Length: 130
Picture 1 (tube, rainbow, N blue to C red):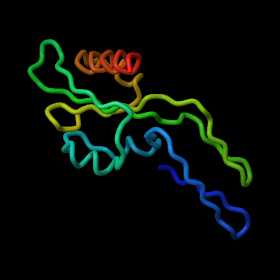
Picture 2 (cartoon, one colour; picture 1 turned 90 degrees about the vertical axis):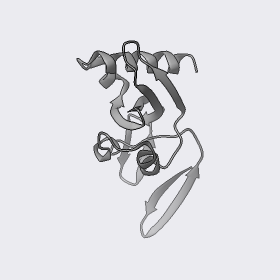
Picture 3 (spheres, rainbow, N blue to C red; picture 1 turned 45 degrees about the vertical axis):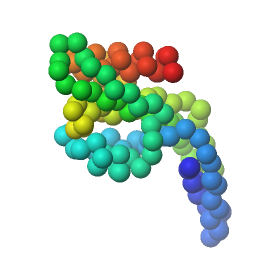
């Protein structure tokens, strides 16, 4: 559930909207590598659009990915606020239930780490097939 506030003079109106889980842009900076899964979930305080577990070839570790939508354009003009219908994917990954890597899908694809690239491929395939 999302609550939007629009201010008209001294009066505030709130609009409640139900929709898919959406992560804000300030989320990434507040996460810390190796945080416990339960702690991250408590901070995010919403279920992902998709949650999947996987094994990566060449690794004995267990990986879990949480896939959220994240709006890419919200802007305001005067007292009007506009939400675009465009979004990207924000992914939070865990290695053995500890926060491992997080960011946009592009972050997973452009890193030099093969393991993280493989997770990005898994996320892409999972998203396309959901």
